[in-house]
Image (tube, rainbow, N blue to C red; front, side, top):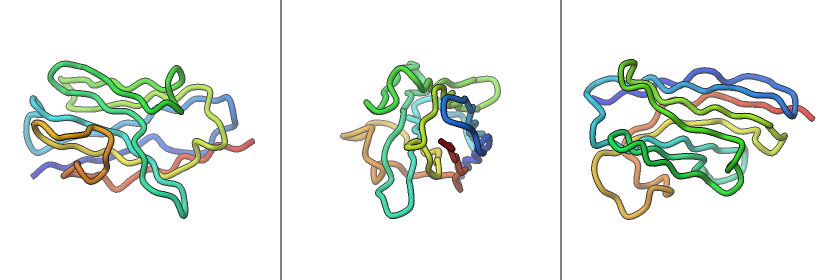
Length: 125
């Protein structure tokens, strides 16, 4: 059974940085796609960044391009989200998610089979 555990959230001032971690366990993740999503109160869960574990190919939402970087450490079975130049509108609960193989869309939350419990990121102005 795949388990995903996020950490690294917190309170930061606008312009600051945070690094989120997603520790993955339960199997090897070759062939998996790993994503970071976020959800603010009253809003939908939106994709932030995605990485193909095998190829390292990445995808970013337009709102975070140039500010956020997704990466993975094969030895530690961990996916990271480095968030720089944070803005108040980045405030949300951030979730790590995963699926195996091919799906029609990397950016749809309903394509993902496994989810972590989330970590809160709050950016003050």
